[in-house]
Amino acid sequence: MSGKSKVKVSKFKKQRRVGVELPGLGKPGALAKRSYPPGHHGQARRRPTEYSLRLTEKQKVLFHYNIREKQFRRFVKDAKRGHVVNWTDKLFSLLETRLDNIVFRLGFARSLPAARQMVVHGHVLVDGRVLDRPSAIVQIGQVISMKEKYYKSVQYEVLKENPTLPLPEFLERNEEKKGLEVGKLTHLPTLSDVPFELQSRFISELYANVK
Image (cartoon, rainbow, N blue to C red; front, side, top):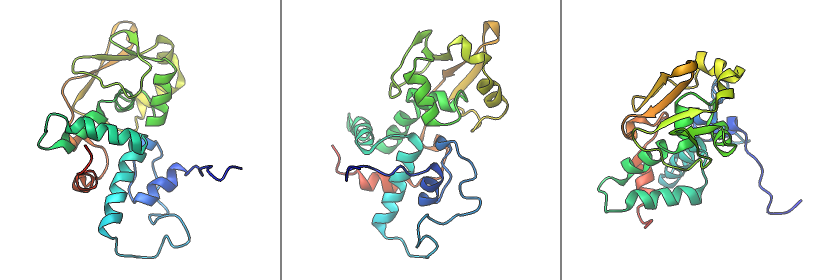
């Protein structure tokens, strides 16, 4: 085995590591029995350092939105373009309007990794055309739907009755002809629409020098 191989961390351990349930991982109940971090010293109570607090907030974002550090830095740079005063608001608006996240928040997928796979495999339509790029930014007024066979699946019926999250205010979901449901972005989301506990000032401080 290569020394560069990475150990895959379970969804439960990721959530225990940051001390909060992240709906994007689609695994509710991660902290129900063990609310402390994983590992031999997980239950030891230590006063967190300023750096560890910043790192934890960053990990929440990376874990929930299913993105890597390099991708996240690109979003930070995009958010800072045009000398935006509060770039963290724009940052999370961009993250929330990614196509894979919109599919997830509309309730068409149990988790963000599942939504990403649906996009990549060509099951998602934007304004009636297949778009297979998970990081594509959905624009206000664009209509998101699934290929017709998805609406006949057990997965669709289960999620319709028991979605991971309630529908956010920046989206609407309507039934079209043939009983097929479609979603639409009605306005841009804000930091308050992020579906987990987040202290955004730590993100702002950690990436203050990124240009």
